[in-house]
Length: 322
Ligand SMILES: C[S@@+](CC[C@H](N)C(=O)[O-])C[C@H]1O[C@@H](n2cnc3c(N)ncnc32)[C@H](O)[C@@H]1O
Image (cartoon, protein in one colour):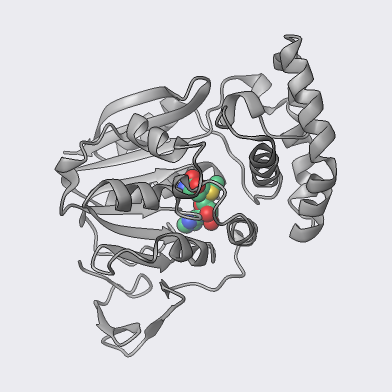
């Protein structure tokens, strides 16, 4: 794999526990990940979140849920055998729920990147895999430390809406794909004007500025009544109308349905924090992302919504570099 210094494009060589370019600039490996950026960037909330809820969404730690695996293969439709020995890039890996799926269910070589120190949570979850197969980087989608056109597969799940310039993010992902290779993205859909008539968008201007531990404490304090209220409204059939005004994640359409009470509370607190804390939240139209794929030279093979586990839906666009 060709690693490059994203700031001057010089090749990087591996030396002890660091990467170094010809000019002597070094990038250390700390707690399992090569570091190209500092922690104090706009994704600090994600670092906080994933280092607090390190295991919550990881299939391996939950008998009740294999949601990550189900979503991964529903979206990618990748053949496990076909991935053997392939170089796969994952951008925005968080605590590594999809890193785990790739590492445990295929024999691909995985390169995972996140801009936050969530890479530490990912390493705790997946660092037991051989280092020839699992490579971790704290770096930005805008400055990726790889030579252009190196990967057979590139995927970026649940990330684009949280980046400041979504089109540029897509362009940078495309640059990493080999000719004949594939890019897949999934993201929050925008369905219509009503998407933004939601407690999330009403409160976010304040909540995204709150100190993270204060926001988390407030969510924890209110989780029980909010869960009860939204479940009650779902039961009597008016949840679709009312629940968008309860400042809590969508229990019916985003969470695994067979969680026990304690797990449900933990997932709700995590997903609610995830909806109120990010600096950027920019849902996209599938059609727009599809046009960007084409503009950047990909042949689009799929653009639409994908259902998995009953009610769960994500928007996805897939393409192959011509
Ligand atoms: C909602 S989380 C999703 C994580 C993981 N893909 C999952 O589905 O569990 C979004 C992730 O994107 C990362 N992210 C945001 N902007 C990024 C950027 N510019 N470069 C790389 N990662 C970024 C965040 O740090 C965060 O971990």
